[in-house]
Image: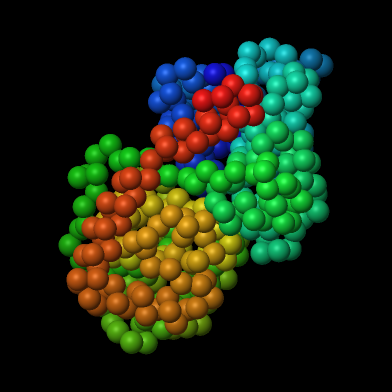
Length: 381
């Protein structure tokens, strides 16, 4: 089975969960001995792990009349132009590469996948990691929506990362339920979990880690922190990441009079993230609309209890995390207080959570995707 995958991010150079999920899924799928994956990126950096797949840089593909097109490898202001250029590269790859099925990750690569399908007649599977309804809190960009809708309409099958996202695809994009499947994300096993241990510290540490944007609900984290600090001392809060709401959150922390208990370390990656989570006593993801959310799994993997919103896809599969509505800052504050004040509760969530996520494996997600491929191709299993 040969898959031509179109993606936008791949570790170690990632800006969000898309790259983490792309890596985990392809690595899990590569456990199937007859699976060959060619993964297209706008701009590889040369240090990606290619031990289990082949990476093609769109920036290295010659386009007649244009030569090799430059890509930022990020999400620039001219993003729509880069998406169009990426589609132009897909034309060349469709003629050049040998594959059985096309797989497009997220809306930026849907045009490339649709074009490759029309050129070759090979079936297209699109992978919905998020929709614009998630990113915009309902204030949908009509251009982005049109790209998403066309990709879904043209796809032979649609994979969603949660039932939450599946319902959005069916209800907001008019897709037939039989065409849409859920394959929950997973977490990559830590090669050396013993490396990440909690450093001795007097204060308890409560962490938010992710893009500081309206989708992630950072203001609810700040409000919950203020309520906790009204009740007790000896707790510190970290908001790690970057985003367009960062300055607003710094102002809100100052307004609530808790700046001396708050830290904004900026964007973190790799071992920095794992060590911060290992050092944390509580991890919080108060997302307003989170298609899945891998970060709580990563926190639980190193023994950090997690509080997640009911409005997240991972809430569908996690049983040893505390769940609240994203807007219920009182419930969130109560949960934080209970974890940092009651050692037995912390210990139970830490141990049971770690055991739970160690059984949520990418290889299982990869097998589900493979069954979808076989179904689309009529190969049987």
